[in-house]
View 1 (cartoon, rainbow, N blue to C red):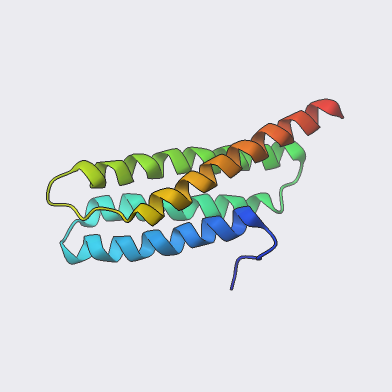
View 2: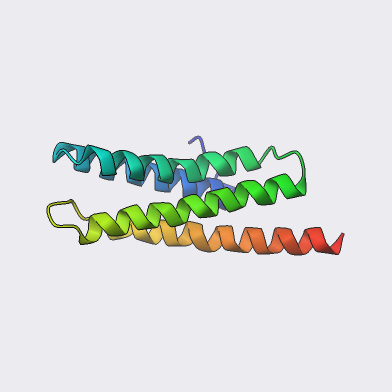
Length: 121
């Protein structure tokens, strides 16, 4: 597996990307290409930002990359909610929303603790 099992945020964001990729395939089967690409881009960006954060140049850079990932998570939730409520669109699996919620909570904790650690030094 490409995401280290001992790093929860990398593991969860990788799982989320795989789940969204499968959902996007469903969307493309019914020719919902534009929204499918939006969901794919924002969801996979979360994990990419967190992978990049692992090699941040400073604590501030790390926090910034985590905030970008958190914003992408919010955007992903928006696109998935649109799919959930739009007629003639496939409904995302509850598992995707569960994983996304775990990612959002974890990112919030990482950002909060990183800021606290930055302020205490």
